[in-house]
Length: 344
Image 1 (cartoon, one colour):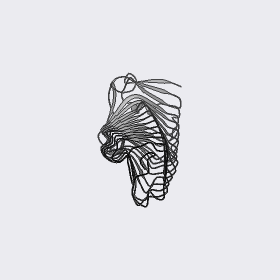
Image 2 (tube, one colour; image 1 turned 120 degrees about the vertical axis):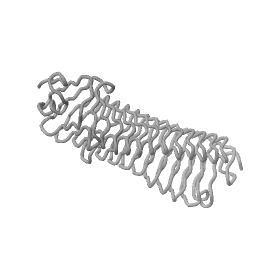
Image 3 (cartoon, helix red, strand yellow; image 1 turned 90 degrees about the horizontal axis):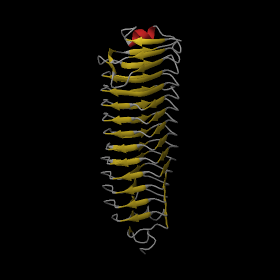
Image 4 (cartoon, helix red, strand yellow; image 1 turned 60 degrees about the horizontal axis):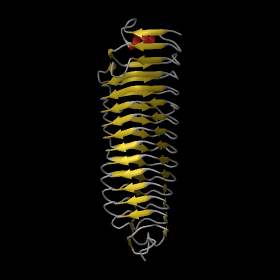
């Protein structure tokens, strides 16, 4: 196994890659380097280590992907920027690590992970100014951790595949901060601030825990054809539209959340939403209703919530209010009366 140096020994990163074998390391000094770079078969465990994303730039002519991993696994790419390609980084294999990397100005997506690519780690990655998604993952069991996605034309993080993790990321200025189209994903301790939609859930079996979702222009969390997911202990505040909105969704547990100061309803169930459980949440000072059940929804359970200073605290249009259960909610106002513990 050998350590190679760019540009001291090789003028380009690609030239160093072509001379490298499994387990080799390529160290890249500061500079602007022409791309693209392709890591093909026969280079498992190869590492390309730049001297910092602010120092090492792989610059593109605008065609194809700036950096591609295909045919080799357990590759590490760190400490560099990929700028100006159609796609910044394409990952087609498993068990790779992309860390301390910036991707900027991609014509379509910043990072794409192919179907079948698994257990890839994206750590302290920044993606900004892409025409499409910041990162789009079609594979399963990939990890996006402590990364930032800003001002991308579509979604910040797009999980099309199942069993993916988003942990401690920040997304702003995107269409959706995070969209879950693959099932059984985890979104933990992220900040989705200033997007059009904070989180969009379109699948089943997801856990949304301890996220901060604020100042999104359309909605904080949108459940769209989603089923059987848990939304636990999030702060959903100061969104210009509803804090949470359900359209044709069912079997969602919304437990222990703080939903306050949103521009319309705190939580709005509409579009045929069924069988929600909304328990043990604090829902305060929303411009319209704290919890609103539209007439085309049914079979909800709403218990032990603390609601105040919304307009009203609970609103349930018939027949939604008649076929749903309201129990031990602390609130002052409801339509019709009697849905709060003390407003009979």
